[in-house]
Amino acid sequence: MNNEVKENVNNSSLDDADIENKPKFLLMNIMEEIVFLKTKEIIRFDKDACKCEKCLNDICAIVLNSVKPKYATTEVGSLYARALNVDTTEVISISVEIAKAIELVKQRPIH
Image (tube, rainbow, N blue to C red; front, side):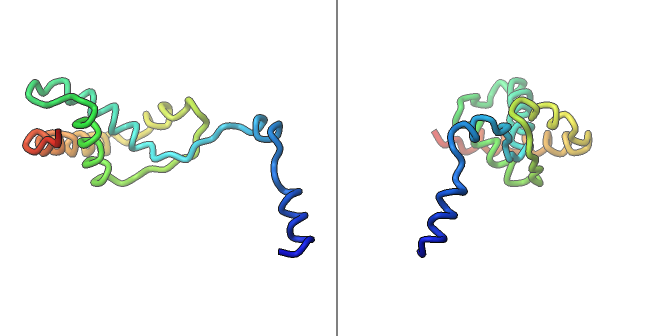
């Protein structure tokens, strides 16, 4: 790397003060939060379903692999507000996928 390029790279780096003053934004698939919350809501009605962290994560992974992701950039803390804007038919579809995933994990738990 020549000296001019090295100098430009060094000058373009941010110092700690610049980083601290930047707004904190996240790139997230908001479906993760929706699926997780909805799974916890639905599974409590199934007395035979295991509710351990491993099984909950397995159920969520199965569902997230079957639903369309919804990515958003969001400030920390406003994710929940964005999650509320999901279409009602989408929530019903997610609920059906959760019920299927619960049954699948009940049949083949991995713990």
